[in-house]
Image (cartoon, rainbow, N blue to C red):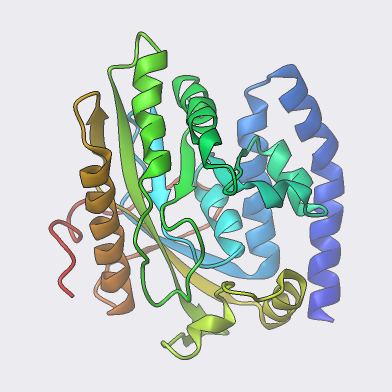
Length: 286
């Protein structure tokens, strides 16, 4: 019954906002950035997702956000707290419903089978950054089991360099690390063995995982913002990528060990919390 009513409510909400978002994107209204945040905030409430935060998103622009990736639910959680444009794999654009929503959120799609297209993708990301959109990419390039952070790929971080090259007024791009950790389910802490109930990775099918997670409900997730890194024309993307990876891993470990001070927020409200850098300076201790 929970699955039926929750998915029914999400369907009604989607049908109500989809035409408005399509029109906002078509007309280039600023509203096209706010509607997805409002939509995903309500989706999180319907699904029983409670978001806690440490730190806050920087106000500096242009802003590229690099995060770890655990589940399809990451999309809802991140958009609920920040009006971002996602970088997604090309296959997502062909998925029923999900692909349409991704397009209406103005996602940038990457064809992993055609490495020679990376430059074109970076140029598109650069245009979004120069236009004032916070762009988010998942540094690992795939999802994990939620208990660890995989090595970050460096290719798409080159989009920051392209943004500097293509826009005369842009002298540097800010890159901010973001950690997402699922900490509880049904009011109980998630341990290493049980975190896979929320994580969606490997060859797991989307629809069965979605139904099971919606049926359980009451998911707790921690979103941690790290210190932004200034990237200019002299920056080494490999060094920057490693620094971001270390920061995300350190934040993830801190949350998993239960040492972070977190503030519970309603997804539709603005982010607030401790100043970034209080807990996550330095390299990963393990």
